Image (cartoon, rainbow, N blue to C red; front, side):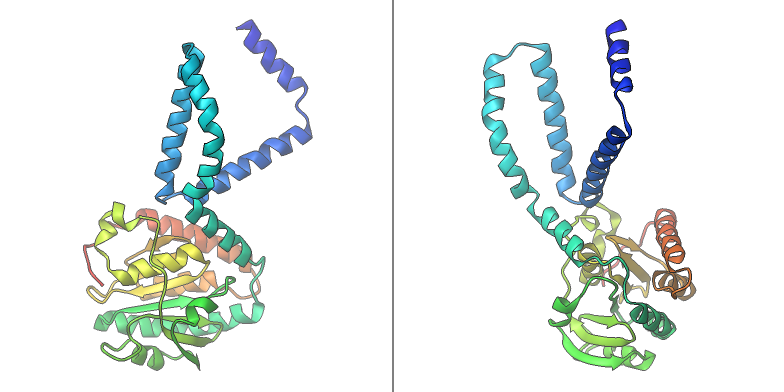
Length: 293
């Protein structure tokens, strides 16, 4: 006990502001890594590796195992090269998000998007009432040009009538996503990546169709805000940052979108409020009904 207390006192006497910054930076690196891996299939691998490391440390410290220790020393260098291969998709996604991120997105684009939100909400309300499936992506800081290129270019001003026509069943453009940048519809019938996180496979939401999986997919690889209308039930959902919030009313949808695309004054505060509100609603939302879209 005395030895432990002496070691602690020794560390505290040499703890400086530089040491505090050093510890903080390491903590932030681990926090960011775990946040990127959260709710992904790689998280199970992380838990397995941590459990294996703890088991190995306990075995080698309690019992003398020369052969086992030699095996660990031999395998350890190979694991250093294997980890990037195992976590390649997550590392690539993190680097893509880092490369696409901008400190502030364009003021003109934010204001333009805020001006078109009522038009989108009006169209979404009518689509939900008619149970016409829809997938609408709002571009933010990260460019979505690679997904725009997969669809039919429109470059048209946003209007409820145009959105209703695009998502009318059995029309040429209804199957796919509409991407909105600023105050214009850049393209329709766009192909989006499907979710790779495995969230829907481990929850009651696994009954959802490709529309919701595509919404989660684009929300995982970019900072876009995605509005989804279920063709089966008419449920309105919003996907952002790899999360799906369901059972929204038109009024709630408009409040969320306004908070994600605030005007210049109070933009940061409103954005943080939107993120907080999004998380609270996600935790409080009832279990979704089984549906196919």
